[in-house]
Amino acid sequence: MVRIAGILAVATLALAACSDSGDQAKARLQGLQTVVYAAPDLKRAKEWYSEVLGIEPYFDEAFYVGFNVGGFELALDPSRPVARPAGSGAIVYWGVDDVEGELKRLVGLGATLHAPFQDVGGGVQVGTVLDPFGNALGLIYNPRFEIDD
Image 1 (cartoon, rainbow, N blue to C red):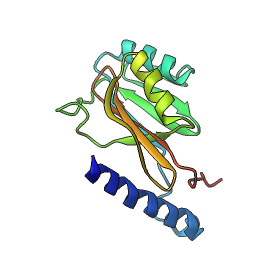
Image 2: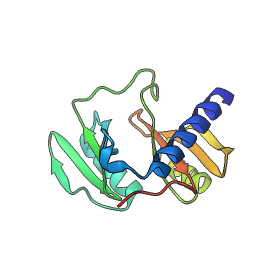
Image 3: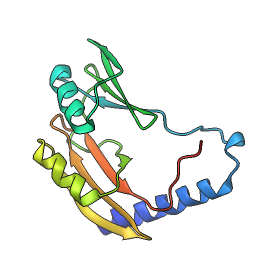
Image 4: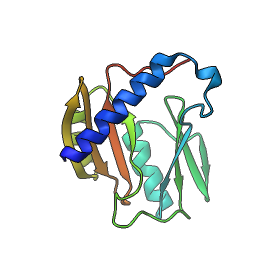
């Protein structure tokens, strides 16, 4: 857990430095746009994420389902393999106002706690669950992070 906290602290400082640089016009990477999760049971995954997000997908086909989450895409792909062991792939952290409360809510909806609520310093709080399909779903509250318009 200490190693994760250290990594997250470094990532938080890097994010703060990036957002303070103010020169996004010259940035090679424009920012995250789409996160793709494995969905071996696409129908069930679509239903679960619709309930978790409180919205319906904007794109819904047999080969791909996409949700617009605050201007970013959360995608479900039935042909993508789930990382093994579960949760061992990249972890994407979705911003929330209440990490601890949201972790409890997601567990109540069928997720499994992966990394419990943790304050990693500077007011930044994180936690991770595994969705019912084995994908890691990270939650973060970062009071210094702002999305550039």
